[in-house]
Amino acid sequence: MIVSSLVFFLILLSAALYRRYYPVRRIACLPIEEVPDGLLLLDLRDYNESNGSILDQALHIPVAYLKRHARHIPRKPLHIIARDDVEKNVGIRLLHRYGYEVNSYSIASCDCQERGRTSRWNITKKSKTA
Image 1 (cartoon, rainbow, N blue to C red):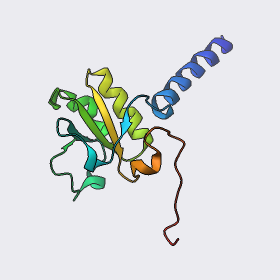
Image 2: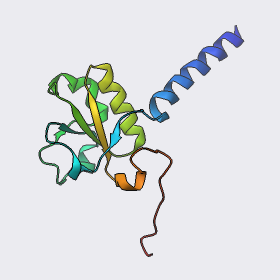
Image 3: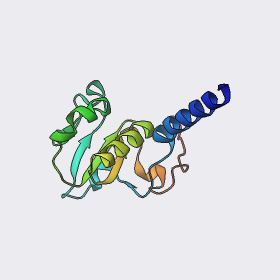
Image 4: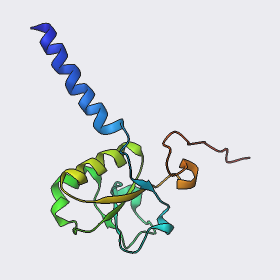
């Protein structure tokens, strides 16, 4: 009984960790300036993080409210803007579950040239004083 409970707990834990931290593949990282015109910008950041943002044309639905407001998103290919990798992974997986096509993403605090556009592990932090 204890072993089966432990196995069940480990399965649940690994599923939760996979959804949050395992990167979503085959979705390009693009700077916001290079996003093609046909994509709808969807900002997944919290309201106070994106307040006063230059992205007035973006549809703003925080990741925490995505399940509730997914039906209000037009059925167009999407470019998402997220705060970090966890928010990006959760948002893309939820949008895929609801049948949306996510073509690209941007991380608000990171430039895609820094990320190497393809490699998640190619992030180098640069000193602000150098």
